Length: 103
Image (cartoon, rainbow, N blue to C red; front, side):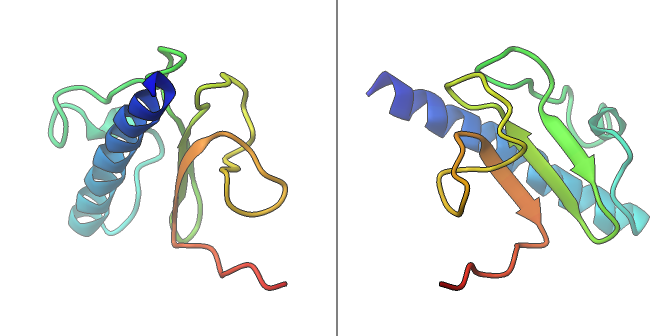
């Protein structure tokens, strides 16, 4: 039960940052190079990864970004979550959304 709570808390933090990235992109026509660009105008402070206490992983791309927490196993699965193959434990938001996995 505690892990579910912790995953929910991190999901909230990650979503907050992702929505802030969207606001930054709307105002600046591109995503920032680092999350530090969000504070203090968009966020008072960029939240850290709930599990590791370190900054969230943020990788801007030409068309969006990859944003993730290592998750409860504290292991960097390169943004792979519980959906897709290979599976991971990271709590991830990817923009734009990846194409659906076809079997």
